Structure formats: C-alpha cells, structure tokens
Image 1 (cartoon, helix red, strand yellow):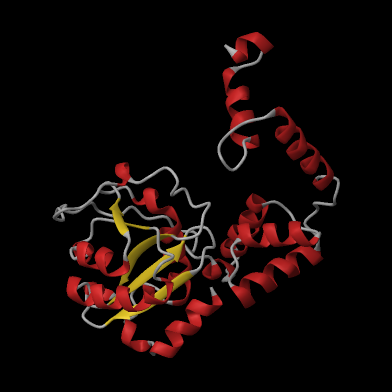
Image 2 (image 1 turned 135 degrees about the vertical axis):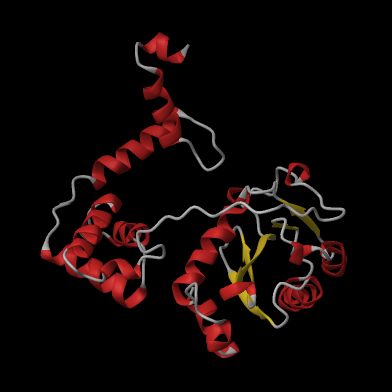
Length: 269
C-alpha cells in the first residue's frame, strides 16, 4: 500500500525501512532524515583507494588482525580516509590472486564452508528460546550467550561466553573436553563473579550443556536453548568464536596453549 501510494516499487520501501530503522526496529522520518544527512556528509570525504588507504589497511590487518568491517568503522569514527568494506575485500582478493598473504588475516580466510548436519540428541528439561522474554534483546546488561569450540577430533574443548550488551567475552579450557560435568564446573567458576547480574543465558543443544538445570540453579538464572541447527539465534557468541578462532585456529591442539596465553587472547579481544 505504501509503495502504491508514493508511486515506488515495494523493494524501494523495503530497502528504506531496513536501512533507516532504529535499534528497536522502528522507523520514523526524523531518524531516517538524520541518518541520510550523516551519510551525505560522510560521502563528501575522499574515497579514492590511495597509497595512504592501502597502507592503513595493511597495517590494521597485519598488526591487529582487524576485519574490513572493523577497519571501515574505526576510520569512520576517527575521520580517516577509507574506502567501503566491499572495496577492502576487493583489495584483499586482488592481493591473494597476486600471491599475497593478506587474506590469511581474515577470520574466515575468504572461505565459507558448509557444515554437515548431524544427529540431534535432545536435552532433558530444556527450555526453548521461544519462551525467552522479549526484554532479553541485548540492550540491557546481564543477558549472556554460551557455546564451546573444539579441537581436532573433538578431543579438546573450550567454553566461550559473551555478555550481549557490552560484547565482553570469556574463554576457558575444559579439562575433560565436551563433558557435561566438567562444563558445569568451569561455567560456574567463570560466571561466579557476575552472580546477581546474570539475567538469562542462551545456548545451543550440545550434549555438553545437559546439566543446565544445576548451572541455572547455582547461578540464580535461567537458561534457554536455541532451535536445533539455528546458530543465528545466538549470533553474538558465534561471531565471538570466530574472533577466538583467529588466534586458536582449527586443526591446532589446545594443549599448545597455556592458560595464561588463553587469557591473553581473551583480554585482547
């Protein structure tokens, strides 16, 4: 109806709503105009791929392992000359085609692989994410996400946690791998300092979380589970795991890292 009323295609309206809505997902003309004005001012700046821009990309990627999104965002905040995210990716692909190794600093190394879907093993007394209150939208402090990363052959494992509003993350070794009892103890130890400020925890359906009731009771919180094979429902911890994988790559045994080195990685992120 809106598209017909203004004489535009419905895709134009959808793009406008998607681009200019606020953090709550609402759309207002005043907020949209403000964003348009900001973009107009930003685009006045030079966006040519100069030697200065190239050197800045190389430095941030090689020294800090920043993603193109981080580089573009940082430069935008500081007012530094920088090109778009897609242009940075084009430069990385060109460098790779010419024999360069800049792509190795990307978290996914320009590769996107499909994971095989395995057999789903249900967890007793799990509470679905469908029952999680709408207030747990990541805008307040105290809503956490939890996951694990595993080593070669699924023999080693580490617990990862992230607080949604601040992006603060925790990583800790699981001495017994993906063992539910061991994870219960490590998760309680790592979250104990935040007890009283843990509203909810969201995790997936891995069997290592089978003792979720005991963990929730010990921490005085509630734990919700995503739908099977719906990792996007806990997207922040998935992204955080990619950050950790930048320093703890797949195929490398976890016993190659000391506990101190693991904490240094956590603090850097």
